[in-house]
Image (cartoon, rainbow, N blue to C red; front, side, top):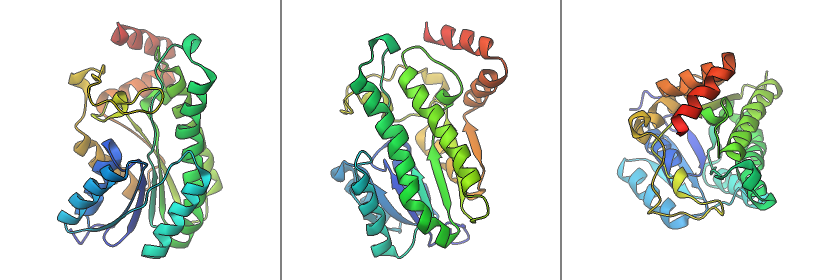
Length: 265
């Protein structure tokens, strides 16, 4: 698909070893992009890289922990050293702490905010100088949880509300630089997020509690996310129910709380 605007563009994705990060990498590869894949799980990244190469695209594995500022800074330098530029940076690394607010410890809160908020902000920080050079695109992965409260996901919702705010601020700060910032808020998408515990440990056997009939396949989600990034949209909420919940949450908050309450029972 050489006509794609992403053809020969360099795409850096954090959290690229699974879920949305992995499937976005596959979609970019199909469009002729060059991929720089970051996360902590190098073995998983190698699997993603292999698939990207099978799709005929070029890629590199750049191990990175968004909890470490130096690790992020070095990751971007490695991408530049290898490819010479960054056209699209996607701050996708994230996870969800579960539990009522009265049950969560300071450690739970710190981990939730360090990864989803500080890690995302620093990913942006280190990518922006290079994105300015390429008049590129920054994408932040939020969640519909930013719009509507949900019992037992208070920490996660707070982190994603912060992502939404960071995105809105970056859109003002980047105005006139040629760099766009797209904040993407997925609804229920089939991913590994519910299989990671509050310590950040992955469990293959964890059951996904989210409603199956509302779940989008990850590849379909990745395609609409790429479309939003290509069009430099400021905010993109998706899955039909995700749009509905976000709209209700913004304009009819009490109804939103009632609906979420019903879904949670």
